[in-house]
Length: 350
Image (cartoon, rainbow, N blue to C red; front, top):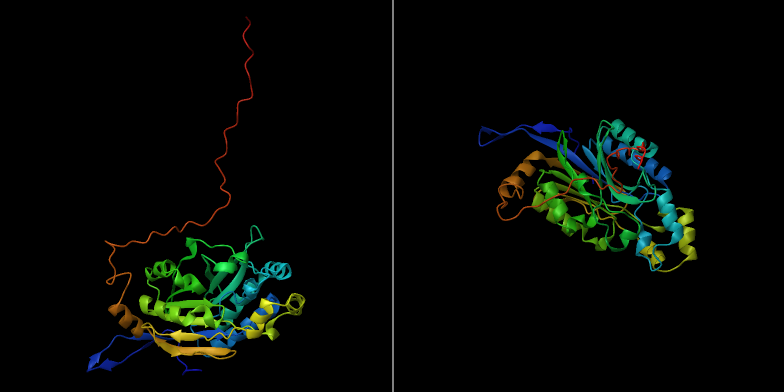
């Protein structure tokens, strides 16, 4: 579904009742509903860049992909033999470090398309190289990395695949067309991470999901849109047998069971774009495609004038949220110890 083209950040003029109204900016949001080649980062990055280019050609201000899209959501953790050693090994080996040559390609695509990009990444810890995080990577239209958000609490069996993020990445980014933020999947069910972003005045929020129908993605995304008075890109990925590498298909064939059933049933994505009052204005999308919605700053101000949960519709004298924004540190270097004096005086003669 493609709406009429519009200029990024264009401010519309108009009158109402003979009165000159505020010039509200207009912008286009895009949700990329597609499947990576699980778990092949090289092939997946080529596909991602192609979709970014297509969205840029339609003047999208921001382009969003699903949870852990690059190089794929760890669907195997939900199987009866989870985690399977072969798939866990492949997952860690093919995870993406930030920054890296892989993210450089995404930055180049964002710059060439002149669009912001928010993409779910299986991020390998560049220090330990032994832990993967479920990360949302934010890239500006100038090709520079704005930041990243690591999922705070993986859900149930996801904890066998991902580590935990920290509060340092609960950040809202100021962009020419509005303030953007993002969370992964059931972080929206945690409530407090969302409020930390609402407190920073988020206006356009990316809700990244794996793409499974039973995740409550639409319900939780609409709730966030209504509470934050923000547009929400509810974006999910796709999963089907043809989206797997030969190595992963072989591992599943050698261990038939629940994982094979998960792949067979697949993920349908069902991506939507939701307005600041919680109404679906585009989608749900079926199959692999790009979902667009033309949006207006006016709708954001209208919704926030009715309900600003971080301002006039709050009670800080009754409720307060305390957030630890200090990055996790496993090893803390202590102060250099004083050098012990090893020169001993000769014992006095008795």
